[in-house]
Length: 101
Image 1 (cartoon, rainbow, N blue to C red):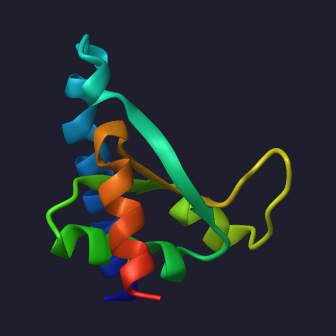
Image 2 (cartoon, one colour; image 1 turned 45 degrees about the horizontal axis):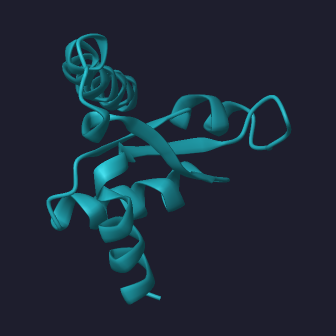
């Protein structure tokens, strides 16, 4: 059961990124530019932020969740779990996250 849950989580993470890849490959509009908004030490903290943004309808995704669970440290080569958002949503994301603090 635990292995199945982990496999399901891995598949869902990859599907969300794969769903975004075609948009990334054919983007010409600068308003559709995807940026790294922030990096987190733990996948739990990153997931909480992502869940909050999802609740507000802000499209976003995380990378590095599995790596940080295996190697729980940050350095100049690995910056932790990264939160990606559309550049056009940056001001709204800052507003949402400051509102929650």
